[in-house]
Length: 500
Image 1: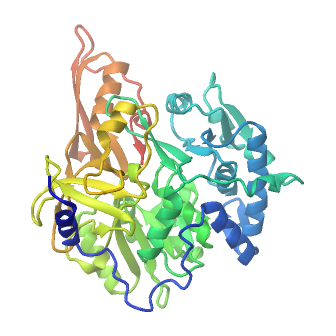
Image 2: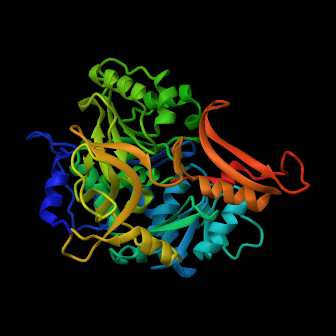
Image 3: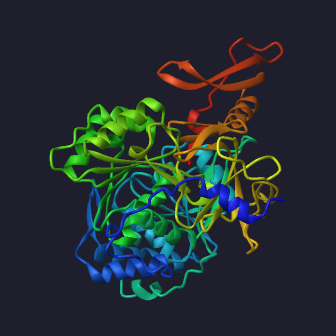
């Protein structure tokens, strides 16, 4: 077995994602020992009247958000929510979404993101599999919960009315190993699997973003662009806990590149998280005004193609944007590596964020040399607990880190990379998983669902570039014996794939 010193030498061949020059560090560094609750309370004390949340239905100051989320936390705790319990979050993109999310975390429970746009079958499965007995809803989503569910629906607008007992849970401790959220991703067996992420990973992610110079000096104005069921949303709402303003972008704004470009200017956004497929059409409408603070683009969810990389480098050279390519699986708390696009001529995923260890290993778990290919393994504070109620799969993917002396684990990503002169070059997958427009999709899940839900005898799914509308997934099938040439199929695409 290769020793840890040679591993460190191999990893060190990849340059640091950011090497900030003296004097460019943020003026305020967080206390690395502080929990999310402690950080949020510090924000409330320091600037209670600063705007915390902006949405289409209004805005909330830090003090108002604190009072309303305290009320939600007290109401949830009175109904049995607490450590290691799961509360569903099925809300529209309004202020209530942030109030509900923060209220769940304050109660000590974990949140389960539920996208109201997903089919009822998907929602029913995730509620049942997660064991959630409570679900926060609002007037726009209460009708989306599947019938027959054991989960009790609670209207967030009713729970968030402050009362004299709302502040009783402020001091409720959060154990770093306690469950913070559980998020369902595509599964190769035809059923989505739940990634369980602990509380301690969240402040560590925020620390990594700050130490990696990916946040700027507060207060920033951060666009919440991702779906709540997409793990990139975590790094967006986390920015509240350093005093930034969170701007929730409405569904119509998110889906219209021209409206999104206008919203960036109207809200004076400083940061926007976005997938490459979403970014490309946005750039056709986005023209940074002279003298405007450059927009920090945190790009992830899929690989950046060379043409887009070049376009972003040109925009960065003109001073309009600061594009950063981010890589990380859901199982490692959103982000593991970063790469400033302006620093290299070709796409790459950079190097580990602070607190993260990334290995590129061969089949015998030996580090590969620069220019050789291997599988990416991620270790450090962001590695999740594992998959809920899937001990076998957890054991296969979350394995002992042979290069650490503390008994910690590393996550086997299934991604193939090659250490290069500028950073890690992403080359693809070792299995049937694909990334398409920010969605992590198991081709085997598509095949499994269609085989189960239709009368097709055999199904094969593949990614093709000649699909209507561009790159997409094509399905080839063999009709069942005596069945129609075209199988009877009523399966929604949202039933098969989900963002992560």
